Amino acid sequence: MLKSIRFTVHYWTEPFQNVVLVGDTPLLGAWDVRHGLHLGHLDNGQWILEVILPGDFDAEAVEYKYVLVDDSHNLSFWEAGPNHVLSLKHSVVSNGVVEIRDTFQVRPLCLLRSVAASS
Image (cartoon, rainbow, N blue to C red; front, side, top):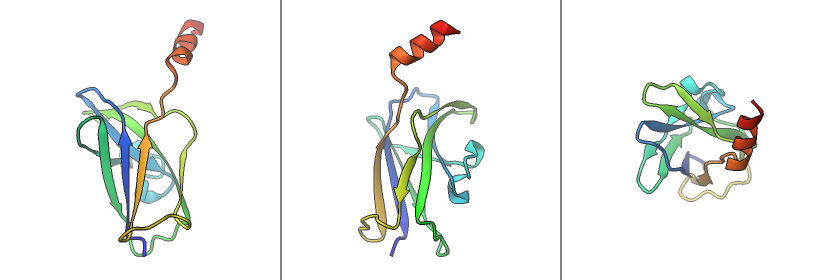
């Protein structure tokens, strides 16, 4: 039986930045960063969060993204690329926990430079 999802993401942040998880369910803030879940910082750029699932949680899949915010909860930027999709129906569960290991998706520097140059 699925009891929780443990999200681990690697991203080097500045001292004033925090990583927040948002997603398509109310449990993950319903895409509202103000209601997203803050990850805890380990070290070496690792951030972690374990989300305990309520007994009535019945979603078969969850879409989510990571967002950087500053210490005042102001939005820094959303992770680039498509949403992450976790299929809970087909996940391998160990002791009731699904382990997710992600890398924060960033825009390539050359793309950022070309966008800035065209502005």
